[in-house]
Image (cartoon, rainbow, N blue to C red; front, side, top):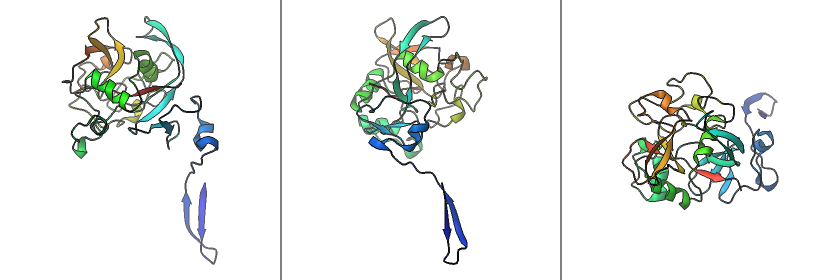
Amino acid sequence: MELRLLSPQGAELKRLEFSLNVSGGDGVPAWWSQAKVRPPLPLPPGLSFGEAAGTYLSEKDRSVLVYVPGAKLRVGGADGQEESVEGFFIGKFEVTRAQLAKILGRPEPPAAQADLPATHVSWDEASRYCRTVGLRLPSEAEWELAARGTDGRTWPWGDEAPDQNHLNAVSGGLSPVGSLPQGASPYGCLDMAGNASEWVQDWLRKRDRHVVKGGSFKTAKVEFCQPTRRMSFESNRNDRDELGFRVARSAR
């Protein structure tokens, strides 16, 4: 929409361009009607519509989430087991140090570190964070679907070879969450390759270890950051400076 301000004599003083985010019935924002992917309504308790198109807000910890529609995929790639995944919400960003400090009562990080991914966090602590704010960890299948979609791509952004504009790997340290928009997944999730590796719900065959996805800034070979790859750590490990998590929520 364009607004023109006129003087009493009719001369244009200033032109302003802006967009309106007008809510329709039941608080549905204007962008909803144009969204390519939409969750069922009403939204789950504790979630509200975000200001940016296609985003949803966790009311307790202010996490920004996106919706991923249900689909079938082979977890781990073409040779993996096919799984059916129902529609779900997942964090657009990794949980930050500032968020973790507020929810779990950790010391507040320095301002320069507030938006870095929360690390030095065990699976148990990540799960407790999620429960406290009415969310959960994503399953491995959900995480992988959010990271690479259904078209068989190699990386979240497609099949283009990765560079420093796509992911933070083989580097000297963490980056603030969401620093590399060119690395976005088909659903708009960021940092699903590199930066911090991420806990998911799934146990490994050994019942004291949980699956970890995404690779990190410490990953020695960039191909190990591909969404189909997996690692694992003992569930009580909180000594890893590259291991974090993101939140998820069932759509129903």
